Length: 185
Image 1 (cartoon, rainbow, N blue to C red):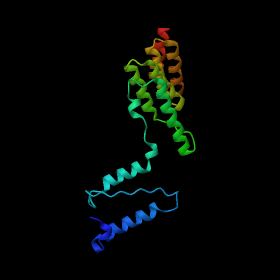
Image 2: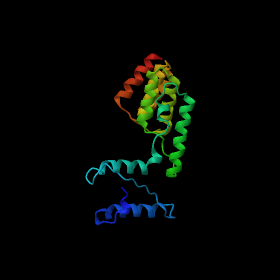
Image 3: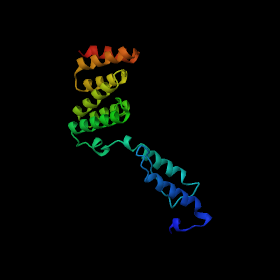
Image 4: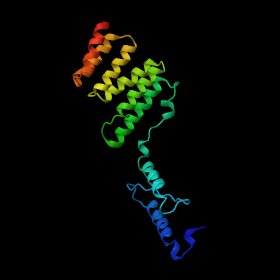
């Protein structure tokens, strides 16, 4: 049961691994990040996938999204969502040493549309505005803001955002959308 008490050649590799892990764990070098785990149900050929997964999670634990249950909950307030997003923004900036958007553009955009579908326009607007703040050179974020304003029958703001999208990406799609919105004013 205790491989460290077995001094046969058969356990030399396992004992060496355990000894190494103990030396590193008790090292005074705090700059070295180290984690070690034993997989009793795996053998050499099967340990690769679970160990790689656990290794990546261990190394990038700081990058994990927090409060996903609250982000996905209908009942979470806009203020709480903004607090979660702001916390992540600050956490990433502290880790990298420079500003990094807390979430990918498509995730913010999808969250905006999801909240529109759930009849939560204030949350939808927040997500779309954050996407525009974090990704100001994306025509897509302004197109999404236009969709939001159009759903609120605010055609003036919708037009303003489609025009911004067209400035960034002069396509026929945006040109036609501008004409459609002008006809609604």
